[in-house]
View: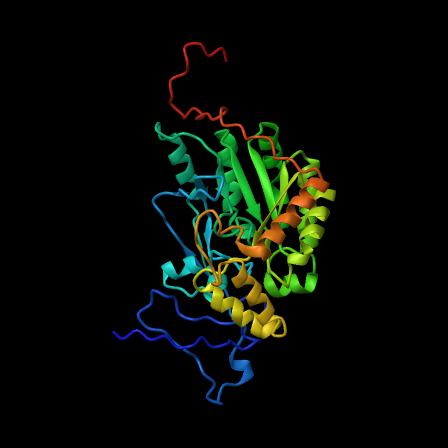
Length: 366
């Protein structure tokens, strides 16, 4: 079958209402691509807003491993694939093409759930060869995206983590994380947990265009305040910082989060691997055409003249004068606010709870 590569077509605004991407080009692994066009016969009422589709996934294992030297964990769990938050810049978008879907609107509307995640996690922990280390939630798609309100898979995972006294971290753009304060506060008392809230901009209107179904920036700051008040260690991720669009807000984002209790901060410049470079260009054409050329020029400057440089060691910070300036600004605000590293997580408390029928210890006094 001949492979075709047509240019992606912008989906009508009414059809993509409330979504981040403006197109839905076929995935890069598909043998053929499809392109819609206006033949003059489509009526506005015949193109209703795209509705989400929920698919059930039944994996054999739930823990994903990585060997990247750029990130501080080697294992993660993702309860969902795809993310209805719809963040246009999301680095996870290209992974949706492995399912035969588009990294565009499909990523936001064709979602998979893993209802058996907690059982699989328990099974992994019960393996005698398993050795505990911090497990990350929210590394690919958000564990507190809107689906979690219905399926509560993330909450079921947290219950297992607490039961086994297993260290973990959460990264999210949702204030829904506060719902699980009962579990998180208990885990915090044991030194098991840390939570990162990601904030890209404090501008409400811009946030709605870039991340249409995520919690507002103000709600994320509220979540930091609530978590911190209960002793849950919080950090703020000023990410992604987009040159000439949001990077000027880095100091304001970090300061606002620290005022509400965040103890640590990080930043990550925008990355545009694979399909993201085209999706983000389309988004700029639609929402910020006057800034497009300048934004893209600065992005290329931080990646050696390319849209993206995947090299370990530099991919999360970039290179060149613009990247160096951003790093220097972060260092200044970090020192000004006296930010320290969060206390190390406890790994020595891991335990396998007794199962029904297990023989009691000879020395058990209960």
